[in-house]
Length: 462
Ligand code: EPZ
Image (cartoon, rainbow, N blue to C red; front, side):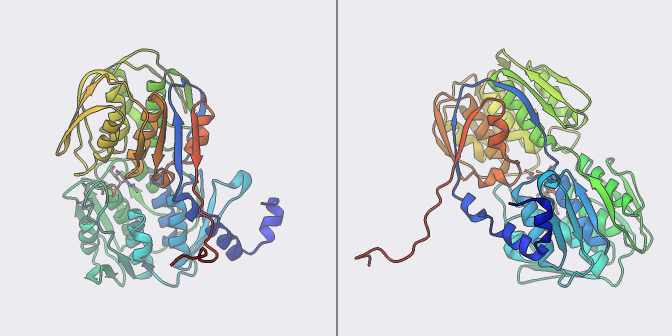
């Protein structure tokens, strides 16, 4: 890879191409092999939050000056966002070595305000560029995301909100075309709480003429983190993190440097792994204040977690109690922790009823857990989990990001060697999870079936 000085001599475009060819395709065939039964012991450093980093990268579109983001997680979705911004003409430099979690984004020369279907279909969060593009460039062409494994997930509220800010929106050939000479402030009252909807329109309103008031907003920590960045860029936002956000538009934004908040979902995932495998793990560089609902639920199940300023220690050596769960918007129990909690419920004494309120199809992991010996009955948005059931190793496959995490946790407690297929789902949002788990004593290995390039047709092949 060479020293940083040597690397800096390599032109950016070449470095980007090197990154692009760095064998991403290879990972698509990867599997995890996990031998269960090891207690996890030691420290795990929590990465920056994917769901805070993605909108922060989109926010760079709002200014022609460089935006420097630190504590960026090294996960696939960040690579996709970088590709998206580069395809519009942005310069996106990802740090190396000690700076590997920093990115510098310059959107001085955006040539094409478009998010193509090829990118949007791999990552719905690409639609977060819609508001910033209209606000800065006066127009945007963004592919509609299409269906998703966990639900329909339309973006009608993003569109409705932009229309409230004076944009003209048309839809053709699977694309949203939005235009506005200059957006103007207005009142947006969300029919439903939407995280990226709140973020997208908050970004758009920063450059609108006059004041925008947004009601029934998402209160997730990632929304407040985005507002903190935008205010550093010269925006005028109040109330982020509450259900009412006020934005006084400005004519121009400038560059800024910002550190992304820790990933509360990654932290929650490791907490549940710690609770089920026994042992003693401490999560570092995390923010316990963002995990209130999960910590309460773990307490209800009989697990003690010791929070520090930026650490969480979990030691658990005893059987858990069953507890019902309903997913809600923040500060309620996060839907992104529901799958991992379901694995916990299979290991608890008694019956837990899990109700998924946010997405209509987010129980794909249940059948895979049943393959490992769990007793789960799914009925629409409710799943009834009968515990305690010993889990045994099996071949299972991931269907989406968080479902994959629930299977990894299940494999850590199962008897035998589990093979988990399609782990590219987990690479989208967890930074080197197998290395972090191995660091605390898990027996986990990534195997990649790198099929050799076919050179010539085998002799006698039709
Ligand atoms: C964000 O998705 C997160 N993604 C999701 O995390 C998370 O599950 C979700 O919020 C809920 O917490 C990012 O931040 C990048 P929503 P988002 O808009 O914003 C409906 C992960 O695992 N809705 O808050 O797309 C929607 O269908 C991912 O990291 C509309 O009907 O979710 C859903 O039922 C998965 N119309 C509900 O609102 C709209 O225009 C909440 O969705 C928008 C949303």
